[in-house]
Image 1 (cartoon, rainbow, N blue to C red):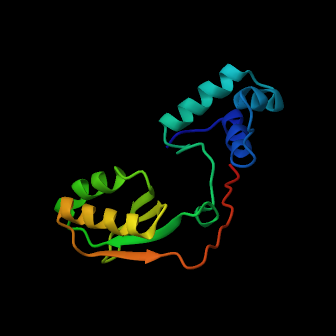
Image 2: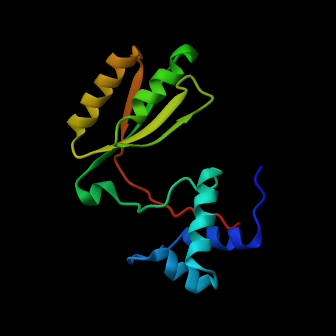
Length: 151
């Protein structure tokens, strides 16, 4: 497990919310945290490489942009897991893909501009992988929560 120093913790706690929207956001963070822009960028790159930071990006409400969101669950044989997850991850609308200890052992979220796009993509995934037991569980209500983790 990677050890975080006090500066890493300050950076992580700060960038989880209200990331600066400006041409040089890391410079703005550096000024606020009393560090150099170069140091912030270096530390964020290191934290990403270590897998502590997964991504930095905006979160959008798909329905407000006219998109559709669905949760999918698939029953995937162990020998097909690698092929299945690589295939699913190749679709730009897939935002999460994770294993669960369940009969349906691979779960992923899919966002697209049309329900038909999602349905066609799921047919393509099934054809490419031979996995036929894929559930499509479209969102009917969106309950968005903020997840911030104080480090």
